[in-house]
Image (tube, rainbow, N blue to C red; front, side, top):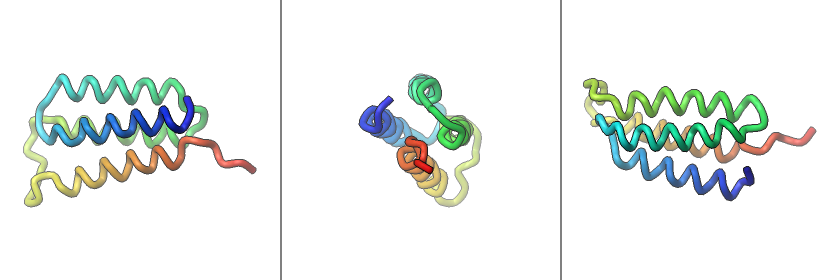
Length: 96
């Protein structure tokens, strides 16, 4: 998967995050599918670890639990978007 495809999927993930927080099983399933496509194409460990963290954070983001705190999930949203950006930046293995 080339960097442009990764950027496109990351843009999709941004759109999914914008549809939360809160329970939304359809969007959560679609986001997990996007993560699965990325996971299948990841060529080294760092992007895989970022993907695993994203999955955990998305599960929380789309949960019905009362986790949002006083900022209605704004900190969690920023954290999710930061992880998506981190994934884009880390996709290609650094050259030695």
